[in-house]
Length: 344
Image (cartoon, helix red, strand yellow):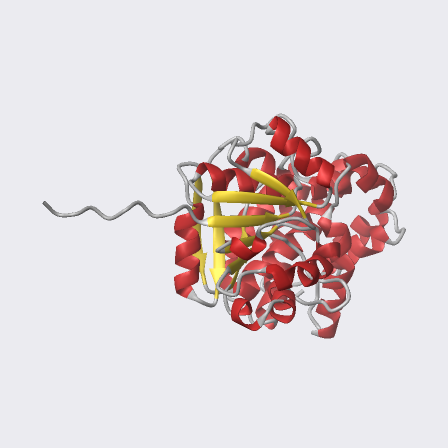
């Protein structure tokens, strides 16, 4: 009689960030057989999750697996994790990674879910990881992006995403780890493209929300989305990304979801700003960070340094700095005529 192989031990995963996306992704991994730890900033939040099996602050209506364990940033099992998932707001990303890096297992992989670019350095977050992680770990970094509203993923509503990594073997391992009957992952080696898509689409979503806030029509929003995708791709190509990435899940797919969904905090923030709120007041109303507000000035600066025209991004920034939405729209519509394939 031939011996059967013993069952593989569950993969240990630490998800850093107890917000909506971190909670939803931790649930997905736990339901897919991983041994998951969710790191929360507040010990009280972690205690409530362990007691009630629900996050008291985000996705409160979603039941979490009983074997999903929540811990605080100060008390965790990072050193035992084969995979560390980073699901943090961009403004605290580097500091949190810097503080946690020394605890990460030298053989672990790191998967980043954060969409944006660092405000001060204008760097992609995989580059930030490359600077903050210890040497053995920084070579095993990947990013995940796509049309993935946490509210829907947490309810097992079908969705797809792209995982990008320089190491194709790492991307395929992660693909198998996260794929479920309701979440389909594809692999890609264009990390720059996937990350710039995730950053830039939030800015275009602000513009789409501003259009909604003015009560404009579907034609307006479709035009903003299409021309927004064109300027996203222009910058991406200048920064070494592949054009085809912008027509995929991380680009067009995420742009559609973020510009049109009721779950999109960036679209809603734009709508509130068009209604007269300041950016700060809009975020206070949302109760969550709208990453596009943080990313827009950085994206504009990056485009200017590379001499890339991004007229929608420019006008979004102008609105965030006090310009009226109607004046911004007038300037976009009155730009000099050009061919659709032109660079601006």
